[in-house]
Image (cartoon, rainbow, N blue to C red; front, top):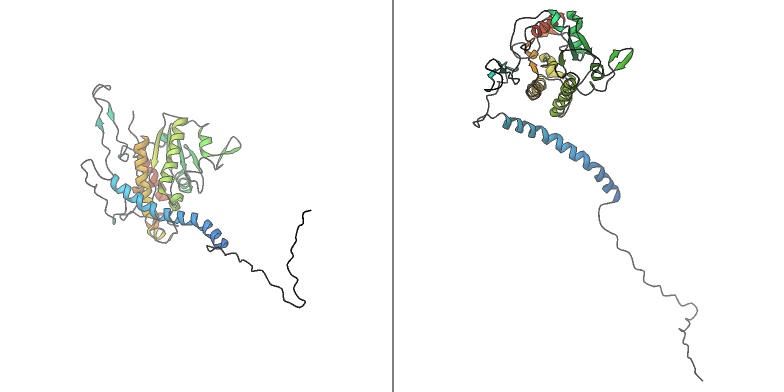
Length: 312
């Protein structure tokens, strides 16, 4: 017979305090509290945007400085800051290479502004479309240029040209570019940029402006396109306005000249049509320092009449 012996722990006497088992305490993980990790996660994009905002303008300025070097590696001579305006350069017309149609054919230099030419009549604008903001609206109203087609709207910009229903056409509101598709035209005058001077990145302005030119050329490949230089503002506005400054306007005009050369369209330096010696708008040219009065609108139109593209 097999016997099994069971042993039990002895009972404790009554009144004997119970022994407590040691409790293992979990170590608290050291690190960043969750609320701070959440705040840091949200703050990182803001830091990245701030760094880009601070660094990109310097990079673009440095890139443009390198781009100003000529073929010999020497920097191009800069316009003195006190002049405050872009110097007009006569366009260079170079002979076409041999075998391209004879010595009579010449290539136009689109990198330079349109030179002065004999004045044209108002009828020159019969087949022209003017695209612009409230400044161009003032030009049309104050000069009575009713024979031209005007697609103008207060606050119009290079991006809203494609999206803003600003034109009444056939009883419907259409964007400027949509209206252009059903318009007969041979010339286009564009004046945009004063409202875009508050944009952070100037290259975006140049790119969107280029999209307008591409869209017009797609609608009418044979159209003569004029990019008008942005007319400056008064020195008072330039020194007090939150974002509209003549320095920014000059920067944009340089980009527009580059764009004219790239797209092979004509640049009219209308910034010199009404500017004073220091490159700003005279005090009597605009009551608010931005929008031209009647006399200066007529000067603007006269400048366009005496700066037209050569006939093909």
